[in-house]
Length: 116
Length: 116
Image (cartoon, rainbow over all chains, first blue to last red; front, top):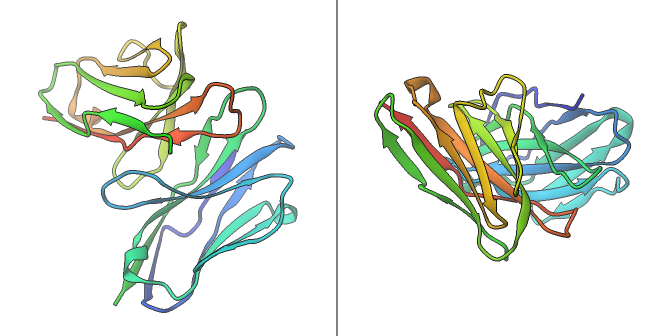
C-alpha cells in the first residue's frame, strides 16, 4: 500500500531562516513519482516538483531544493532564506506510475509559518 | 499551459439539497479524472476515479450513491453531492490526466462546499 508521512504538522521560522520539510514514503512499486505541492489559503495546489523513482539527483530551483534518497524512502524539501510569501501548507505526494492512472497519495501536509 | 477548471469555486447550499461541481479540462482531453476531498486542516483524500464513458471507481468508505460522478465527455467530469449535510462541507478538488500522456496530471483550483 502507498503511504506518505509528513511528520511535521506545523513549522514556524523567522524570515531568512532556512527550513526543511520532511517527507517519508512507503510503496511496493519500483516505479513511482514523488511530488511537492504548495497550498496557499485560497486552496489551489501549486505544483513545485515531480521526481520519478529512477532519478535520485537532487534538484535546486532558486531558493528551493529537494533531496531524494531511495535508501531511506525520503524526499525532503528545503527552502533557503525563507520569505513571508512562503507561508502555506506544503504537501508531499506519491503517485502510481503503472498503467494509465495517476492516483495521488498525499501526506498530511506541513503548515509553514514564516514570520517577518 | 494546460488548465483544469472547477466550477463553482465556492458554493453554499442548504442541508438536504444536492449540489453539482464541475471539473473541466480546458485545452486537453482526459479519459481519466480524479476527485479528492480535503476537510479543514487535513490532507487530500482520493474519493474516486472518474472514467469517461464508464462508471466511476470509488475508494473504500466513499458512498457512491451520495457522491455521484459522471464523466460524460472527454473534457468534463461532474461530482454531485446528493442530500448534502453539514459534514459534507469540504474542499473538493479534481485532477485530470491528458489522453496519451502518462506522465502528466493537472489539478483544478478546487471547490469550497459549505452546507448549512
